[in-house]
Each structure stands twice: as C-alpha cells, then as structure tokens.
Amino acid sequence: MMARWRRLAQSLAALLVLALAGCSDRGPAADPLPVPVPSFTGGGSIGDASPAPAQPVADDGFSNARKEMVEQHIQRAGVKDERVLQAMREVPRHRFVPEEQVGRAYDNRPLPIGFGQTISQPYVVGLMSELLDVQDGDKVLEIGTGSGYQGAVLAKLTDRVWSIEIIPELARRASSTLDNLGYRVEVKQADGYFGWPEQGPFDGIIVTAAPDHMPQPLIQQLAEGGKLVVPVGPTGTYQTLWRVTKRDGQIVSENITDVIFVPLVRDRD
Ligand code: SAH
Image (cartoon, rainbow, N blue to C red; front, side, top):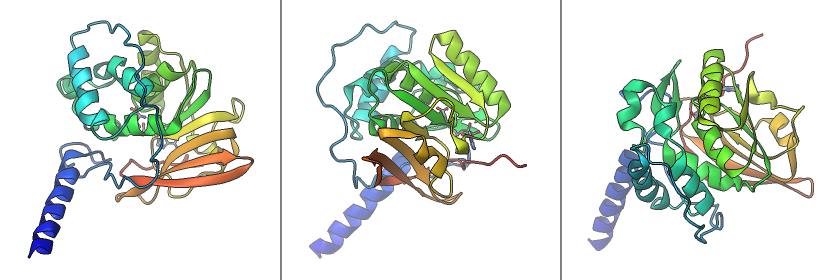
C-alpha cells in the first residue's frame, strides 16, 4: 500500500517537473513540453558555491525580476556557480526578446524570437554556462547565436567570445543588440557545425541547437582541458545534453540530462 502511494507521489512529482520546465522548438503556444527534464545524473561537482562580492546592478526596472528569476528558477534548480548567477542577475534578457514578449522576459521559459527559433529557457542557459566552467580570459565559441542572450551571459564571464548563427537576419540582429548593450561578442553567419577553426582552439564550445550526432569538427577545435557542451539527438523528442572534455588528448564524455532543443540545421549545398 505504502509503496503504491510512494509511486503515485513520485509520478506526480515527475509531472510537476515536466510542467515547470519548458523549452522546445514549437513555440510557447503549442508548447507544454519541457526542457530540461532534470535527471541529475553526472555533473555533480560542477560550479563554485563560494559567494562572489555583490556588484552594483543598474536599475532598469527589471533588476528585481532578474533576481527573482535567478533565485527561484536557476539557483533552486541546482546551479551554484556564483559568477554565472551574477551574470544572469545583470544581463537584461528583456532586451533580447521581441517587444511583445518583454512582459514574459523573466519567466523561466523559452520565448519565440522569429524565424521559428526561440531564446533558451533561463535555467538551461544557467546550467549550460555552469557546465562550460568559463574562466576569465578563456576563448569560448557558441553555436546558435539566436537572440544573443547566451552570448551576453558568456561575455560577462570572459571577454573572448565568438558566436555563429546560420540565419542571416538573426545573426545581424543579435550582433547589433550585443553591440548596443556593450557586450563583446563576435558574431558571424555560417553553418556552425564546422566551428570557427581560424579562431580556435577554444577552452569552451557551447551548442544551443541539437545536432543528431556529435560534431567532430567541434571536438577537434577544443583546446587541451577544453569543454564542449552540446545536446545530441533526434529532432522533435528529447536529446541528451553532453559535456565532452579533452584531457591529455583523450575525450571524456558526461551524460548530463535530457533536454529539448531546436535542431541544428545544415547549410544545403
Ligand atoms: N543561444 C540562443 C538560442 C538558440 S536557438 C539565445 O540565447 O537566444 C538555436 C539557434 O541555433 C537558432 O537561432 C538557429 O537558427 C541556430 N542554428 C541552427 N542550426 C545552426 C547551425 N548549423 N549553425 C549555426 N546556428 C544554427
């Protein structure tokens, strides 16, 4: 009897997690599907729990909303790296979403940014940034610039960030948003599957669209000790978020959790 109740309680808890998460390529209206579905496997010792000195945050009318977002949806979900948390308290997510989405900019959900694409869920941005473990001065490459928001969070952690977006209009728009806000991110329009060999090797590579297999060119562009954080799997269902680390020339892969991302599309030629 007890066991049955426990199973029922576990199923309800799982449903709640599904309802609370949320990110997919379908856009929010038709989008009850969650991302990520935390499995809490792997990645146990990431991050740095020691508090960093508080920095002044310019009050743009949203700083409380950001603080709340970080406390309720990012810290509470297990992200501990204080540099990442502080970056997310400061980067104005509302400046990266279309005007009609500004009121929802600090909800823990992906939002449409046009061209069938979404700005990622804040928790996913926090988790992936923590997994990347960016140190000041590190060279970081992002594949899938989208709105530019993830790039801005990375630019708070190091001043050497490159980002590749395949949709020309998004690449242009993100680049000008980042410039206007003073974030140093070099954006180019290309198929990010091939990385940016002229700028590599990188200490961190983050992929914010899902390829259906591990992209070898990106692994090749990792520096010694470098980390690749990438969701890999089929379109339209869960993918696996992996962290791949190059150590002594060898590849160490950690399966982090299940997620749903838009697909990494390939240039047709
Ligand atoms: N990181 C973004 C959200 C990413 S949405 C943000 O913070 O807003 C995924 C993005 O990946 C989309 O903009 C999509 O156009 C882009 N993308 C898909 N396939 C790509 C590829 N092969 N190379 C580069 N970008 C790609």
